[in-house]
Image 1 (tube, rainbow, N blue to C red):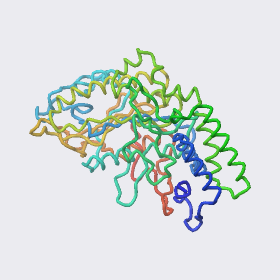
Image 2: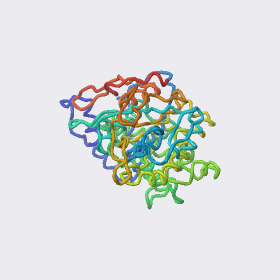
Image 3: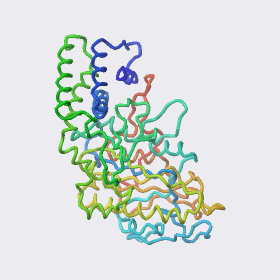
Image 4: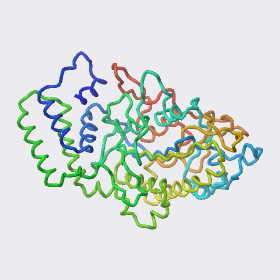
Length: 444
């Protein structure tokens, strides 16, 4: 039944019929299997016929989208203001990059890979609330009271589907934010949540393991029973969605038993030297797992990292958080590059919004969406570039303003997905993948 409801976004409601006896039996059987990854994969591709092929020969075939929750300050990271008064520039200073530019004083390792990244110092939107800023940056759309837009990861899952028997879209460590989801698209295209912290000693991917009390023999028995049910009801009316679901339930079994799939998520297989290079921290091991996933075939990995809502003592908070990000991010860029993966992988380091230009009475910074900074790398993005600028006090864009739609259009362009292509929302009605956004041609 859920599958039928999800299909309504691309069907005439007048053609909708109640589930058949065969469908009830099948759905009931699936609910009893206890394989949530199977449910995910079966729905993920049951609607595969609705996904249109993307443009040929894209520059990139994977994205690592790193999202700093809370709103990371541009002053202390990518847009220091060394000549501004102390109450604007803060106390952390700046560091010179290998391209002769300046980054925040705590970004010493990122400064060594600046020739491989493009910094955008003129990001801007109008949403100062956390939820609305997050929606803007994860979907490329301003929030709407009448429709929920899909995340960029869900659009990529819709357009390309899975490869190498892995989910096309993963979230590390979890997919708890609603704007990471599939929006008006089917839940088929939602993210696969890793479900744990890669830095934990006993880290396990939740849905790569059989349910408690189900061993390999019992799983094989359930698989045989499902095939018997299929054969028994084969003479009844057909459902294309359920037939597709059958085929990809087989893939769920394959994934659970696949040595290759388990290897992709097995961060403990990494040499200690590599794990230490990224840092034995939450963000370090999340980014290392992201590299493993895109290397194995996952198309879009979103990495979430909280703690950037620094309303008090931002200098102290940055000293606690930024060196860990600096180490992990620089390690990711170096690691992708030496493995030959950076050329085909877009790495986006983004956040909800920036922080206020002037320190508040608590020596922190408040929400500021008028201007902030992000960084893009890989996938044909030019390195060693500073795109756009903020004014002398970091209050608003001074040159080449960039909005969330422009950012997402550029990422989709690198993947070979036309930003102007229309997807079908409930109604049915066509909606642009990106609306009122332009590819940042200076970066490609």
